[in-house]
Length: 124
Image 1 (cartoon, rainbow, N blue to C red):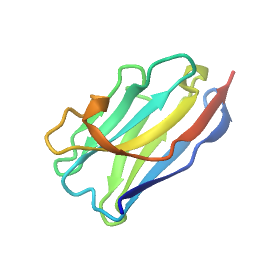
Image 2: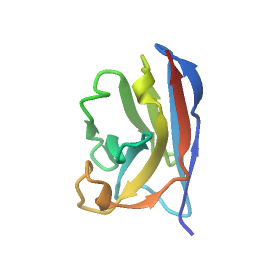
Image 3: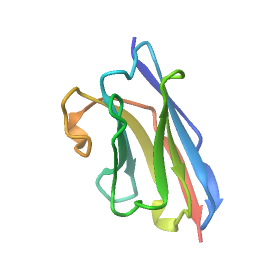
Image 4: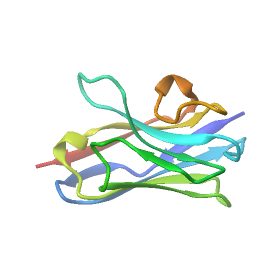
């Protein structure tokens, strides 16, 4: 059974860094894109970043461009989200997800498997 297990997250101060991990078990990422989304209080879920698993292309929301980096470790079937220069507005529950083949990496509805979510809290 496919499962995405997330780790990382926590509470930090503004300007600090955190790394989130997302590991797939029961399947390989090999033919899909993997993305990160976040759910902030009272805000619709939003796209954060994605990586094309076969071509390595990366995609970022404007709000995180230059601060966040998505990367992958094929051998470990793991995707990372390195978050630098965190801001209070980055506070959210972060979810990783596996996209369907050929889907739009920025579109939430094109993702079919989701991790359990992890809380990131950034204090000013």
